[in-house]
Image 1 (cartoon, rainbow, N blue to C red):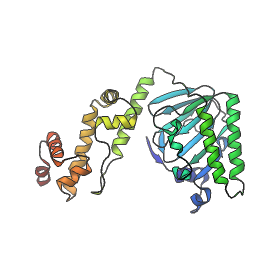
Image 2 (spheres, helix red, strand yellow; image 1 turned 60 degrees about the vertical axis):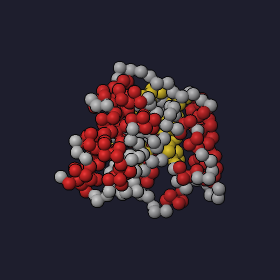
Image 3 (cartoon, helix red, strand yellow; image 1 turned 30 degrees about the vertical axis):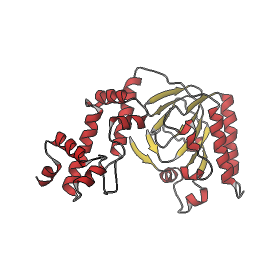
Image 4 (tube, helix red, strand yellow; image 1 turned 135 degrees about the vertical axis):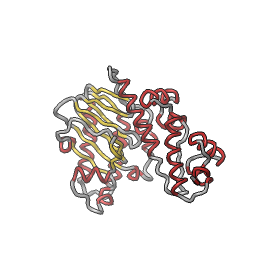
Amino acid sequence: MEKTTTLEEFYRKKLGVLPSDFFKRTGEFNVFNLKDYFGTSKEMPYSRKDYYKISLISGENTVHYADKTLVVNDNMLLFANPKIPYNWEPLTEEKEGSFCVFTEAFFQGFGNFKDYPLFQTQGTPILSITDEEFEKIAVIYKKMFVEINSDYTYKYDVLRNLVFELIHTALKLRPAKIEKDQTSNSTATQRVTSLFLELLERQFPIESVQQRVQLRTPGEFAFHLNIHNNYLNKVLKSATGKTTSQVIAERFTLEARALLKHTNWTISEISWSLGFEDPSHFIKFFKKNEQLTPNTFRGV
């Protein structure tokens, strides 16, 4: 999986140059014609972004979103969430449509768009739409292009309203259906494993006594991935040969070893940073995995 793509990196890639005052001028929002940026690539990278994106795309597409694989046979309206990696593969040569990108800061004080189901981690924010619905939604994007190119003082307020119009239009439609195929199980296994490992690794390295991991138990990881604990365990066992608890324990032990050897932090500080409520629990955990107490390991 590629590293998280920032909005600044997106602009540099698409526009080439990013003036220092760019975000101030644009209000962290922009809208594009898909045809101008579609290029020759037949598959978009499967990665997370640190910005939100709403894309209107014509024709057939396959979408990989978290652990789901969907085939959209008509046209597609895709709501990309920064928390979930995704990519889409065009199944037809020519692509029409538009997309807008924006940050959470763009809506500060204007309304919490993240409360809507399309921007939450659960659910499927990918809609299959007819040609008639495509044209109806395209009208909203046309309004965005007109507004962003105007010199109206409050144009970004209008653009925020147009984003909400996209959201509400989509909520009145229906989500795309997941199509099962021979590779769907293995694909889901790979994606759940990838998402789990990414969540695990993003917590490390620990570089300050003020830093503390937020996810430590299999249940906490399963909750954040919006899947059942037993399913996560089954997937990891299939992909790695280890249980969820074993994978977590190995990574936490590795970090504990590094902190014990390369910092002068107290056992209590290391215990707290690794998410243990009591140092005695950390000592018991470390001894179980290393056959040594933390203090003994540190002195070796």
